Length: 177
Length: 323
Image (cartoon, rainbow over all chains, first blue to last red; front, side, top):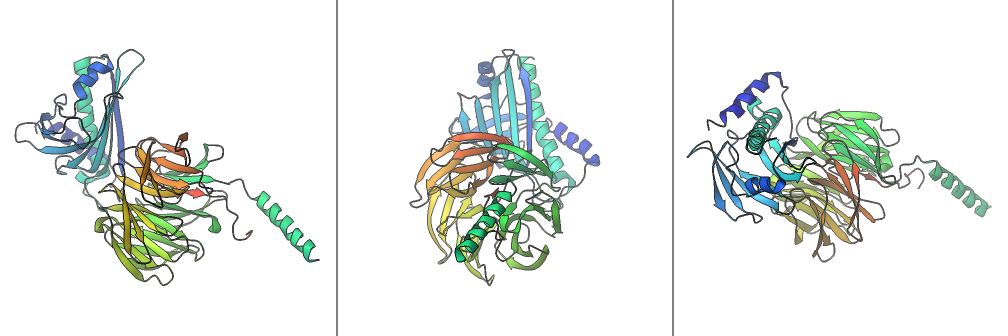
């Protein structure tokens, strides 16, 4: 939970300048980094759906089903007994070094989104290293018109941006740039 | 005398058709993230205009007989009418609620717009852009469609896991049909059956609007969204699988899975049924699928976040003035 706090601080910092959103518009987000390590080495670390230990906000990953479609993982955030996110694998290709998943259960107080789906992909870059791309599609946490500020489109985008950025920053630290 | 009169009018008709602006097979694609409309010449395979439409538009319906495309913007709660000839805005209506999907009754000059938040459909005069009534649906109506013979209006009521069938003439409700989980998009097959894409159960449900009976189900890829029919086949976009599921429209047997762009959503066909067009929301492209070979033959760039939720292809049919 302590590790998640920066995300909420980020959200709060961003809020004053933002307009209120209305209505149900899906948001999309793509964040990417390039690292020095070869794609196979990066995939060896992030390519297992049941090991999210590479992300600094994740305390533990539990669940069954391996990298088979419909496999379920439960991420515990921050510390033992911390908030959880339940996710389901929807696509997996070791060959393409890509997997896709969706959130099946999360409280909007933990991550202010609904109907969240995501892709994580590693591709070779021109320098012999890896290009790591993390993409998300989601709606804001409040499903009706006139959301409270902590559950509007901007809050959803800011929160997911925080999660992706923290994960990608950790991979840059691990693999170099 | 008669003959010459006939041939004279035929010649006039030919001239009139030849003089029509070159919009045979044009796709109008709502780009939700960039708040605009991509006008795509499907013959040339490229975007030929980009028209700003405020309010993050999603639903749309092309109405060639009315010379217009109607676009729904949920953020501003507006319906915009743009001319097919020059894309000029010819009217705008602001609604109170959550407008999302739209279908047009060209003959009756009416629009039907679903209200996601208030379990109803607005009936709107297409000429005056004025609300003339509302129809009660199940919770969270999204997609809506009119039957090919104009007899039925059907809504996909997502949170009711049901379709509502109305008599399109009297607007009386006829049936509430339980389908799969969370139906969102829907379409009629050319023979008049209605099909819903059930997002939550990864199925397509086929139903008979006359009897209100379910006829069968088709398994799809993850998160089916939109449906279209061509060449005796049904085509379904699978949002989370980045594929189009193809099934036999008669037997409902699954036939194939076609890889398209990321997060495929709106789907429509060419007038001759030779091609299927798919808007890929994440990839910002329109995939062109050959309906016979099931190969993707082109990817056309769009604006940001194409949804194209509705009938988005102008088929180049002559308008009623010339037919």
